[in-house]
Amino acid sequence: MRLISFPLFQRCILFACTCLLSLPAVAAVAGKDADHPQLNAPTELAGADYDPADPPRRLRVLVAKGPTTFFFRNGAPHGVEHAMLYQLELFLNRNRPASRPPTRVLYVPVEPGELIPALMAGRGDVAAGLMPVIPGAGQLVEYSQPYLEDKWCLVRHRSRPALPDLAALGDTPLTLPRASYARRLLDADVSVQMTDAADGIDTEALLLAMNGGGDTVTLASQYLFKLWQQRLPNLRMDGCPATSVPAAWAVAPLHPGLLAELNRFVAAQAGKLASAAAKETQRFLPADGKASLPESRGASMDRLAVLAPVFQVVAAANNMDWLLLAAIGQRESKLNPVVRQNGPTGIMQVNPSTARKMGVKDPHGNEGNITAAAKYLNYLRRMFAKPGIAPDDQLFFMLAAYNAGEGRIAQIRRQTAKEGLDPNRWGGNVEVVARRMVGQRLLDYVSSVNRFYLAYQAADRSKYSKTPPRAEDASAPL
Image 1 (cartoon, rainbow, N blue to C red):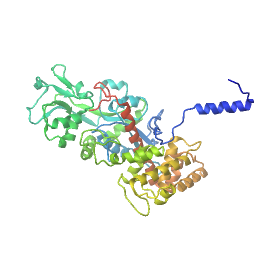
Image 2 (tube, rainbow, N blue to C red):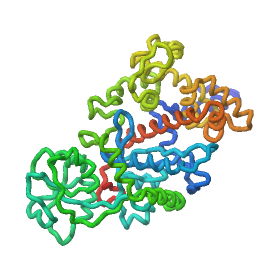
Image 3 (tube, helix red, strand yellow):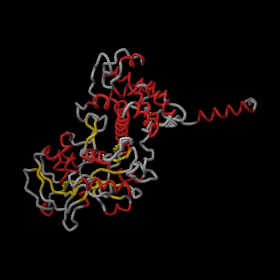
Image 4 (cartoon, rainbow, N blue to C red):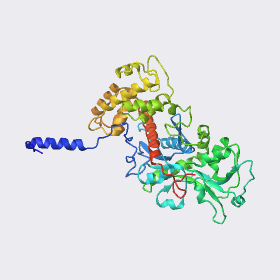
């Protein structure tokens, strides 16, 4: 091969270009394969503790996915942990001065067995998931005051004889999910034949199957059984051989201030937190006893499940994460298209004039409406892809401009710079001016879409790393 001689300057340029070409491509914010900027980033409490006088803007909570704890219905989050954490957010903002932005709870759904490992890895500030307080886990985490004192009881079909205790089982096997905490509660002095439930079957799905007939017996949480009792008319709760089991939230040992605030909240609920959450959740329980993911087709009429294919196709054509489109749709219309000939229209509430600028002639049908929104978000993403704007701020600016208009956000950023604040940062800078010039509603919009988007993506990502929890895991749920 003949060697070609280049002047030194040209060789340097060639070397630099070669190095740049060899670097891995950086995924675009909210791109098809990009993680949410806050999914794996340190939380606001990383290296610090909770200060009631200066609380974080966002408290990231790792919450166990499950048909009782946290699930989606029509794209909206539900579950007993969601209901309790909603009340926690209200409590954290109880004495907030008008000049201070509210603290928002961000939900990061994970598999139950990931709760404690993810908390120890710093992916969240709190772990929540009907977790039983396990003495040995105190070396890893700090538990809050219990919000529930639960019991575990034998459950059987009503057509079969009652079982006052474990000894009454005789030769009848006890069927338990592999991850059931009930395995810890079995009396070593009582001989019990045990059978594993099928892989992937949790307590809720097992109870629903038992309701159809047969002679299966299991040991289940009294709280969980009462929550689902309306769906289980053929089952009966018998003897409760185990002692009471407290359930609580967990924090890292480095956050005593946060733990104290959680304890104040639990104490203020006067023992009614878990029962109120059950009452709130009962009407939303999934019919099949399975935790719905954002794209779940378990319920044929679930709005997000029906729209997911359209979101996915349009997103792929615009290098956009379909879960961001779904999050905006959830915030704009609750995924119920409201069609207007003049003004914002459709699932994404796109202005027809904006749609025309994006090359979409008919923004009223689902596909055209979502396409116009995706193209506009892609346009906004390029607008805010500037040096000095971090990925999370780029996302916030995109959402703010989608809601208030790009011109309005440009005006707010200019005013931010005039006031000596950083026009490239949303939190504590642009948002301060935006609150004054536009109002809290814009900040609430950005926060709401961000919360949906993070929860959707966390749930979606966790399904690919699913490892069934074991009964001995500290984070195995009730």
